[in-house]
View (cartoon, rainbow, N blue to C red):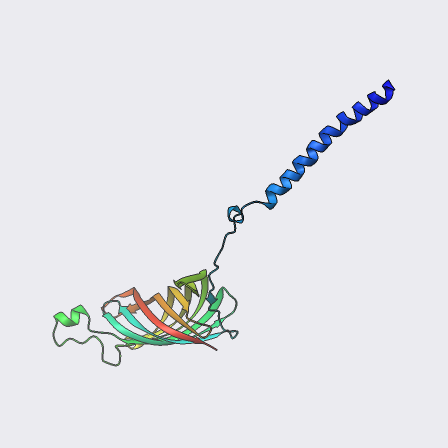
Length: 221
């Protein structure tokens, strides 16, 4: 009789903690189910939609440009030109261009009335160059809130010939440029270049630096 009573007491003691745990678990479930929906974080992220301009599948780029050419000793004059590029890769391109300007009188001619160092024909400044370009900093420009434009800062280096002062001069061309793609067909470009060649007009053979700043548009095809 006593053994039966002892077993009954032990069974009740062992069952009590399990029942408490079950109650705690049940109460926990009720807390989760009864939680206020407003207390749960639900971030609403509005993603901006952008349309990115890309270079057309073709690798040729042809354009026109205009600007100012500072011919050493002959003043700064308007310049016009055309160029043709071939993009070998995303970073490297080849460029051929032709530009023309007309030199003004030198200060020596201005101070000495009637003195003409060059004829009108000899004042024509025409250059032909072939260059290699490297896209130094390709990236994207965010000009509006919902549209991006591909752009690149590039270096140019090449050589060619310059017809000026009645002679042909071997010319080195070094420059820096910026290209902004408006869409997959058209780009806007700004270029700064130095045309370097030897010239003997004022009685001495010297290396001249003829700085040029131009802007233009180009088409891909």
